Image 1 (tube, one colour):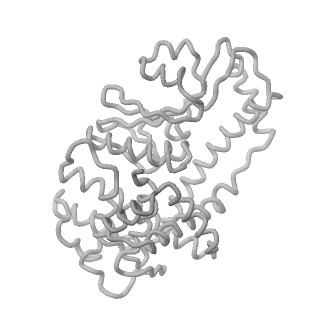
Image 2 (image 1 turned 60 degrees about the horizontal axis):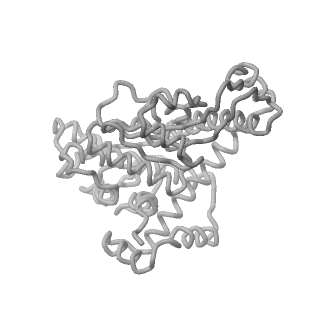
Amino acid sequence: MKPNPTLLRRLLLVALALGAAGAACSSKPASPPVPADAWAVVNGHVITRDAVEKAFRISPPATAPASEEEETTAKLALLDELITEQLLVAKAGALQIQLPDTELDAAYVEARKNIPDETYQQELARRNLTAGDMREGLRRDMLVQKLLDREVLSKVSVTDQEVAAYFEANRAQFNRTEDAYRLAQIVVTPVRDARVANRTNSDATTPQEAAAKAQTVMERLRSGAPFADVAADLSEDPDTAPRGGDLGFVPVSALRQAPPQLRDAVLKGTIGSAKLLNINGAYTVLVVIAKDQAGQKDLAMPEVKQGITEGLRNRRAQLLRTAFLAAIRNGAVIENLAAARILESKGQAPSVAPAAPGSK
Protein backbone atom coordinates (compact mmCIF):
# COMPACT_ATOMS: atom_id res chain seq x y z
CA MET A 1 0.00 0.00 0.00
CA LYS A 2 1.28 3.45 -0.87
CA PRO A 3 1.92 5.91 1.93
CA ASN A 4 -0.76 8.48 2.62
CA PRO A 5 0.82 11.74 1.38
CA THR A 6 -1.75 13.89 3.13
CA LEU A 7 -0.99 12.28 6.48
CA LEU A 8 2.71 12.87 5.98
CA ARG A 9 2.13 16.44 4.82
CA ARG A 10 -0.14 17.36 7.73
CA LEU A 11 2.17 15.81 10.28
CA LEU A 12 5.33 17.18 8.77
CA LEU A 13 4.26 20.75 8.01
CA VAL A 14 3.95 21.58 11.67
CA ALA A 15 7.03 19.61 12.68
CA LEU A 16 9.18 21.29 10.03
CA ALA A 17 8.34 24.69 11.46
CA LEU A 18 10.50 23.83 14.46
CA GLY A 19 13.55 24.63 12.31
CA ALA A 20 16.99 25.06 13.79
CA ALA A 21 16.21 27.65 16.40
CA GLY A 22 14.09 25.68 18.87
CA ALA A 23 10.61 26.55 20.00
CA ALA A 24 11.06 29.94 21.65
CA CYS A 25 7.84 31.96 21.52
CA SER A 26 8.05 35.32 23.25
CA SER A 27 6.09 38.47 22.65
CA LYS A 28 9.20 40.21 21.32
CA PRO A 29 11.71 39.21 18.60
CA ALA A 30 14.60 37.11 19.83
CA SER A 31 17.75 39.06 20.59
CA PRO A 32 20.33 36.56 19.21
CA PRO A 33 21.35 37.02 15.56
CA VAL A 34 18.96 35.52 13.06
CA PRO A 35 20.45 32.45 11.31
CA ALA A 36 21.48 32.94 7.69
CA ASP A 37 18.97 30.32 6.52
CA ALA A 38 15.99 31.95 8.23
CA TRP A 39 13.00 32.54 5.97
CA ALA A 40 10.75 33.96 8.69
CA VAL A 41 10.83 34.93 12.35
CA VAL A 42 7.59 34.64 14.33
CA ASN A 43 7.72 36.16 17.81
CA GLY A 44 11.35 35.12 18.02
CA HIS A 45 10.79 31.64 16.60
CA VAL A 46 12.78 30.94 13.43
CA ILE A 47 11.35 29.11 10.41
CA THR A 48 14.23 28.02 8.20
CA ARG A 49 14.58 27.70 4.48
CA ASP A 50 15.15 23.97 4.93
CA ALA A 51 11.77 23.66 6.68
CA VAL A 52 10.02 25.26 3.72
CA GLU A 53 11.99 23.25 1.15
CA LYS A 54 11.08 19.97 2.86
CA ALA A 55 7.43 21.01 3.10
CA PHE A 56 7.47 21.75 -0.62
CA ARG A 57 9.02 18.38 -1.49
CA ILE A 58 6.23 16.47 0.24
CA SER A 59 3.51 18.45 -1.53
CA PRO A 60 1.66 16.72 -4.40
CA PRO A 61 3.75 16.89 -7.60
CA ALA A 62 2.53 18.89 -10.54
CA THR A 63 1.66 17.14 -13.78
CA ALA A 64 4.49 19.02 -15.51
CA PRO A 65 7.67 20.72 -14.27
CA ALA A 66 6.96 24.10 -12.73
CA SER A 67 9.04 27.19 -13.39
CA GLU A 68 11.28 28.63 -10.70
CA GLU A 69 8.80 31.46 -10.17
CA GLU A 70 5.90 29.03 -9.75
CA GLU A 71 7.85 26.93 -7.27
CA THR A 72 8.81 30.00 -5.28
CA THR A 73 5.18 31.16 -5.20
CA ALA A 74 4.15 27.77 -3.80
CA LYS A 75 6.92 27.92 -1.21
CA LEU A 76 5.80 31.35 -0.05
CA ALA A 77 2.29 29.95 0.45
CA LEU A 78 3.72 27.09 2.51
CA LEU A 79 5.75 29.55 4.55
CA ASP A 80 2.60 31.48 5.38
CA GLU A 81 0.99 28.23 6.57
CA LEU A 82 3.93 27.58 8.86
CA ILE A 83 3.74 31.13 10.23
CA THR A 84 0.06 30.74 11.07
CA GLU A 85 0.66 27.30 12.56
CA GLN A 86 3.35 28.67 14.87
CA LEU A 87 1.07 31.46 16.09
CA LEU A 88 -1.72 29.00 16.83
CA VAL A 89 0.55 26.61 18.72
CA ALA A 90 1.85 29.49 20.80
CA LYS A 91 -1.73 30.61 21.54
CA ALA A 92 -2.65 27.10 22.65
CA GLY A 93 0.29 27.16 25.05
CA ALA A 94 -0.71 30.56 26.43
CA LEU A 95 -4.22 29.24 27.13
CA GLN A 96 -2.74 26.14 28.83
CA ILE A 97 -4.41 23.77 26.38
CA GLN A 98 -2.88 20.37 26.99
CA LEU A 99 -2.74 17.12 25.08
CA PRO A 100 -2.42 13.96 27.23
CA ASP A 101 0.17 11.44 26.05
CA THR A 102 -2.51 8.74 25.89
CA GLU A 103 -4.53 10.83 23.45
CA LEU A 104 -1.46 11.48 21.30
CA ASP A 105 -0.52 7.78 21.34
CA ALA A 106 -3.99 6.76 20.18
CA ALA A 107 -4.00 9.33 17.38
CA TYR A 108 -0.53 8.30 16.23
CA VAL A 109 -1.55 4.64 16.03
CA GLU A 110 -4.73 5.57 14.15
CA ALA A 111 -2.82 7.74 11.67
CA ARG A 112 -0.40 4.91 10.87
CA LYS A 113 -2.81 2.00 10.77
CA ASN A 114 -3.12 1.86 6.97
CA ILE A 115 0.59 2.34 6.26
CA PRO A 116 2.78 -0.77 6.36
CA ASP A 117 5.69 -0.35 8.77
CA GLU A 118 8.30 -0.97 6.09
CA THR A 119 6.77 1.69 3.85
CA TYR A 120 6.51 4.08 6.76
CA GLN A 121 10.17 3.65 7.68
CA GLN A 122 11.21 4.10 4.06
CA GLU A 123 9.30 7.36 3.87
CA LEU A 124 10.92 8.60 7.07
CA ALA A 125 14.37 7.74 5.74
CA ARG A 126 13.68 9.37 2.39
CA ARG A 127 12.68 12.59 4.13
CA ASN A 128 15.49 12.36 6.69
CA LEU A 129 13.01 12.40 9.58
CA THR A 130 12.33 10.26 12.63
CA ALA A 131 9.23 8.86 14.27
CA GLY A 132 9.78 11.47 16.96
CA ASP A 133 9.49 14.21 14.35
CA MET A 134 6.19 12.75 13.19
CA ARG A 135 4.81 12.50 16.71
CA GLU A 136 5.80 16.08 17.47
CA GLY A 137 4.13 17.25 14.27
CA LEU A 138 0.97 15.37 15.19
CA ARG A 139 1.06 16.80 18.71
CA ARG A 140 1.16 20.36 17.39
CA ASP A 141 -1.57 19.66 14.86
CA MET A 142 -3.84 18.26 17.57
CA LEU A 143 -3.13 21.21 19.85
CA VAL A 144 -4.20 23.59 17.09
CA GLN A 145 -7.43 21.62 16.59
CA LYS A 146 -8.12 21.74 20.32
CA LEU A 147 -7.55 25.47 20.24
CA LEU A 148 -9.98 25.99 17.35
CA ASP A 149 -12.55 23.71 18.97
CA ARG A 150 -12.39 25.73 22.19
CA GLU A 151 -12.10 29.25 20.78
CA VAL A 152 -14.25 28.90 17.66
CA LEU A 153 -16.53 25.87 17.38
CA SER A 154 -17.62 25.87 21.03
CA LYS A 155 -18.86 29.45 20.63
CA VAL A 156 -21.08 28.74 17.63
CA SER A 157 -24.76 28.28 18.44
CA VAL A 158 -27.97 28.36 16.42
CA THR A 159 -31.31 28.88 18.12
CA ASP A 160 -34.67 27.44 17.17
CA GLN A 161 -35.85 31.00 16.57
CA GLU A 162 -33.09 31.56 14.01
CA VAL A 163 -33.97 28.30 12.26
CA ALA A 164 -37.64 29.25 12.12
CA ALA A 165 -36.81 32.74 10.84
CA TYR A 166 -34.67 31.29 8.06
CA PHE A 167 -37.41 28.88 7.07
CA GLU A 168 -40.02 31.64 6.90
CA ALA A 169 -37.73 33.92 4.88
CA ASN A 170 -36.93 31.14 2.43
CA ARG A 171 -40.15 29.16 2.46
CA ALA A 172 -40.29 29.04 -1.34
CA GLN A 173 -37.04 27.08 -1.40
CA PHE A 174 -38.71 24.27 0.51
CA ASN A 175 -41.55 23.81 -1.96
CA ARG A 176 -39.99 21.41 -4.45
CA THR A 177 -41.74 21.13 -7.81
CA GLU A 178 -39.26 18.41 -8.75
CA ASP A 179 -36.53 16.32 -7.18
CA ALA A 180 -33.39 18.27 -6.29
CA TYR A 181 -29.90 17.62 -5.03
CA ARG A 182 -28.09 19.75 -2.49
CA LEU A 183 -24.53 20.20 -3.77
CA ALA A 184 -21.27 21.73 -2.63
CA GLN A 185 -18.22 22.44 -4.75
CA ILE A 186 -14.56 23.42 -4.67
CA VAL A 187 -13.38 25.12 -7.86
CA VAL A 188 -9.76 25.35 -9.05
CA THR A 189 -8.99 27.19 -12.30
CA PRO A 190 -5.72 27.25 -14.30
CA VAL A 191 -5.83 31.03 -14.79
CA ARG A 192 -5.55 34.07 -12.55
CA ASP A 193 -8.98 34.93 -11.16
CA ALA A 194 -10.20 38.50 -11.06
CA ARG A 195 -11.73 38.02 -7.62
CA VAL A 196 -10.54 35.59 -4.95
CA ALA A 197 -12.76 35.20 -1.91
CA ASN A 198 -11.29 32.21 -0.09
CA ARG A 199 -9.76 32.86 3.32
CA THR A 200 -6.19 31.93 2.36
CA ASN A 201 -6.18 34.04 -0.84
CA SER A 202 -5.23 30.90 -2.76
CA ASP A 203 -5.34 31.16 -6.56
CA ALA A 204 -3.80 28.72 -9.04
CA THR A 205 -2.61 30.63 -12.10
CA THR A 206 -1.22 27.89 -14.37
CA PRO A 207 -2.33 24.39 -15.43
CA GLN A 208 0.51 22.94 -13.32
CA GLU A 209 -0.53 24.86 -10.23
CA ALA A 210 -4.17 23.92 -10.77
CA ALA A 211 -3.39 20.20 -11.08
CA ALA A 212 -1.26 20.23 -7.93
CA LYS A 213 -3.83 22.24 -5.99
CA ALA A 214 -6.67 19.91 -7.04
CA GLN A 215 -4.72 16.96 -5.67
CA THR A 216 -4.03 18.85 -2.44
CA VAL A 217 -7.77 19.46 -2.08
CA MET A 218 -8.56 15.77 -2.55
CA GLU A 219 -5.90 14.67 -0.11
CA ARG A 220 -7.15 17.04 2.56
CA LEU A 221 -10.64 15.64 2.10
CA ARG A 222 -9.41 12.05 2.26
CA SER A 223 -7.60 12.84 5.49
CA GLY A 224 -10.89 13.83 7.09
CA ALA A 225 -10.89 17.62 6.73
CA PRO A 226 -14.46 19.01 6.57
CA PHE A 227 -15.50 19.85 3.02
CA ALA A 228 -16.74 23.29 4.09
CA ASP A 229 -13.36 24.14 5.63
CA VAL A 230 -11.40 23.06 2.55
CA ALA A 231 -13.76 24.98 0.28
CA ALA A 232 -13.50 28.12 2.41
CA ASP A 233 -9.70 27.82 2.39
CA LEU A 234 -9.05 26.94 -1.24
CA SER A 235 -12.03 27.23 -3.61
CA GLU A 236 -11.62 29.82 -6.34
CA ASP A 237 -15.34 30.37 -6.86
CA PRO A 238 -15.91 33.74 -5.15
CA ASP A 239 -19.65 33.16 -4.74
CA THR A 240 -19.56 29.81 -2.94
CA ALA A 241 -16.15 29.77 -1.18
CA PRO A 242 -17.28 32.08 1.68
CA ARG A 243 -20.13 29.67 2.51
CA GLY A 244 -18.05 26.51 2.36
CA GLY A 245 -18.81 25.70 -1.27
CA ASP A 246 -22.55 25.25 -0.67
CA LEU A 247 -24.56 25.50 -3.91
CA GLY A 248 -27.90 24.83 -2.24
CA PHE A 249 -30.47 22.58 -3.89
CA VAL A 250 -30.18 22.16 -7.65
CA PRO A 251 -33.25 20.75 -9.45
CA VAL A 252 -32.89 17.72 -11.70
CA SER A 253 -33.97 19.75 -14.74
CA ALA A 254 -30.98 22.05 -14.27
CA LEU A 255 -28.63 19.12 -13.80
CA ARG A 256 -29.75 17.62 -17.12
CA GLN A 257 -28.54 20.76 -18.87
CA ALA A 258 -25.10 20.60 -17.17
CA PRO A 259 -22.02 19.06 -18.84
CA PRO A 260 -22.38 15.25 -18.93
CA GLN A 261 -19.44 14.69 -16.60
CA LEU A 262 -20.95 16.92 -13.92
CA ARG A 263 -24.49 15.63 -14.45
CA ASP A 264 -23.44 12.00 -14.10
CA ALA A 265 -21.34 12.75 -11.02
CA VAL A 266 -24.50 13.94 -9.28
CA LEU A 267 -27.16 11.61 -10.63
CA LYS A 268 -24.98 8.48 -10.46
CA GLY A 269 -22.86 9.49 -7.48
CA THR A 270 -23.02 8.55 -3.81
CA ILE A 271 -24.24 11.01 -1.23
CA GLY A 272 -21.35 12.34 0.82
CA SER A 273 -18.62 11.18 -1.57
CA ALA A 274 -16.40 13.87 -3.12
CA LYS A 275 -15.56 13.47 -6.82
CA LEU A 276 -12.85 15.32 -8.73
CA LEU A 277 -13.85 16.51 -12.20
CA ASN A 278 -11.59 18.00 -14.87
CA ILE A 279 -13.68 19.98 -17.34
CA ASN A 280 -11.66 21.80 -20.00
CA GLY A 281 -8.66 22.21 -17.70
CA ALA A 282 -10.63 23.58 -14.75
CA TYR A 283 -11.16 21.36 -11.73
CA THR A 284 -14.33 20.97 -9.68
CA VAL A 285 -14.53 18.83 -6.57
CA LEU A 286 -18.20 18.04 -6.17
CA VAL A 287 -20.05 16.47 -3.27
CA VAL A 288 -23.72 15.57 -3.06
CA ILE A 289 -24.87 16.55 0.41
CA ALA A 290 -28.47 15.34 0.16
CA LYS A 291 -31.30 14.46 -2.20
CA ASP A 292 -34.70 16.05 -1.72
CA GLN A 293 -37.86 14.74 -3.34
CA ALA A 294 -40.55 16.92 -4.83
CA GLY A 295 -43.25 18.27 -2.55
CA GLN A 296 -43.86 20.85 0.15
CA LYS A 297 -41.38 20.68 3.01
CA ASP A 298 -42.20 21.69 6.54
CA LEU A 299 -40.04 22.76 9.46
CA ALA A 300 -41.48 19.89 11.48
CA MET A 301 -39.56 17.48 9.25
CA PRO A 302 -36.31 16.55 11.04
CA GLU A 303 -34.26 16.67 7.84
CA VAL A 304 -35.43 20.22 7.12
CA LYS A 305 -34.61 21.54 10.56
CA GLN A 306 -31.28 19.71 10.62
CA GLY A 307 -30.31 21.03 7.20
CA ILE A 308 -31.08 24.62 8.13
CA THR A 309 -29.28 24.29 11.46
CA GLU A 310 -26.15 22.85 9.87
CA GLY A 311 -26.12 25.50 7.18
CA LEU A 312 -26.43 28.36 9.67
CA ARG A 313 -23.86 26.78 11.98
CA ASN A 314 -21.35 26.31 9.16
CA ARG A 315 -21.69 29.91 8.01
CA ARG A 316 -21.22 31.24 11.53
CA ALA A 317 -18.27 28.94 12.18
CA GLN A 318 -16.58 30.04 8.94
CA LEU A 319 -16.97 33.69 9.90
CA LEU A 320 -15.73 33.19 13.44
CA ARG A 321 -12.78 31.06 12.33
CA THR A 322 -11.72 33.65 9.75
CA ALA A 323 -11.93 36.41 12.35
CA PHE A 324 -9.97 34.32 14.87
CA LEU A 325 -7.17 33.58 12.41
CA ALA A 326 -6.95 37.26 11.52
CA ALA A 327 -6.98 38.35 15.16
CA ILE A 328 -4.26 35.84 16.09
CA ARG A 329 -1.81 37.96 14.09
CA ASN A 330 -2.68 41.15 15.96
CA GLY A 331 0.27 42.12 18.10
CA ALA A 332 2.46 39.34 16.69
CA VAL A 333 5.97 40.20 15.53
CA ILE A 334 6.30 38.53 12.14
CA GLU A 335 9.16 39.07 9.71
CA ASN A 336 8.78 37.28 6.40
CA LEU A 337 12.40 37.45 5.33
CA ALA A 338 11.91 35.41 2.18
CA ALA A 339 9.22 37.77 0.90
CA ALA A 340 11.41 40.77 1.70
CA ARG A 341 14.29 39.21 -0.19
CA ILE A 342 12.13 38.58 -3.27
CA LEU A 343 10.95 42.17 -3.26
CA GLU A 344 14.50 43.40 -2.85
CA SER A 345 15.69 41.29 -5.79
CA LYS A 346 12.72 42.32 -7.98
CA GLY A 347 11.24 38.85 -8.23
CA GLN A 348 14.32 36.64 -8.07
CA ALA A 349 13.92 33.42 -6.09
CA PRO A 350 15.63 33.63 -2.67
CA SER A 351 18.48 31.30 -3.53
CA VAL A 352 20.72 33.07 -1.05
CA ALA A 353 20.08 33.99 2.56
CA PRO A 354 17.31 36.57 3.01
CA ALA A 355 18.13 40.03 4.22
CA ALA A 356 18.53 40.51 7.94
CA PRO A 357 15.51 41.72 9.92
CA GLY A 358 14.95 45.45 9.63
CA SER A 359 17.23 45.90 6.62
CA LYS A 360 16.19 48.15 3.76
